[in-house]
Amino acid sequence: MNKLDTDKRATIIRGLVEGNSIASMVRMTGIAKTTILRLMVRFAEVCKRFHDERVNHLDTKRVQMDEVWAFVGAKDKNASPEKKLEMRWGDCWTWTAIDADSKLMIAWHIGTRDSDSAHAIVGDVFDRLNDRVQITTDGWKPYWAAIANIFGPEIDYAQLVKLYGPDTSTPGKYSPPKCIGIEMHPKIGNPDLAHISTSFIERSNLTVRMGIRRYTRLTNAHSKKIQNHIAMTTIFMTMYNWCRIHQTLKVTPAIQAGLTTRLWEIEDFVKLLD
Image (tube, rainbow, N blue to C red; front, side, top):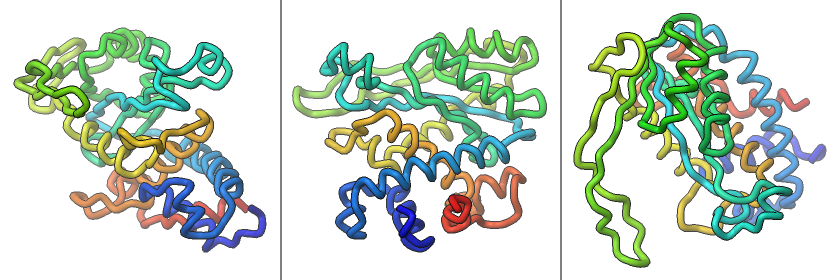
């Protein structure tokens, strides 16, 4: 990997965050798979440090949170107990939190869909905010306990629960049930009903699935190692915040959030490797 120049490294990273698999990057660039994977892991470390240093003291007013399902190695029902224990194979969930106004991805956490992960993501969000905010989540119960424990009464929190009709999919065909309504449930403080929404975080879930090949449904492009899954997620989230111009805002989320005044290029981050 040390022989790769900045342009080649940037080409690899750019390809990965545009939804290409490792195998396709090998075919397009002629660079060995092991070299690409090593670059990915090292670059993710740079991105994580950068995010932790820069995404702090946010003046965010509204936060939306959700979870995205994926799996590592094999789906939970197909993973052996040994693989689950030794390699963390099975279902994994990416918990995300987005600023509803700037579209900045404030925090993310990869783990299981339980109370520990809920406390991890909520605690990360809490540490990055300046003032009182309004948070909206879905109806998943661990959110309520985590937000109450970490924020206490200094929060305006509501859950938006979607109501679904009967499952009409046929065997062998994937089709999610139809949403037939929603319910708003204020939980803590005095949340503004007009801003109880999870639409932005759900749209960002689609962006994640389209931009990270490992999250694509009904393919064999899933991660084989949890370390690589975490690394690619970290890279994508960082590039999304700083290098990707939001189609509605016409600037990057980092600019909109006041974290920078310029568009960062992938090459700027690649230079941090040296």
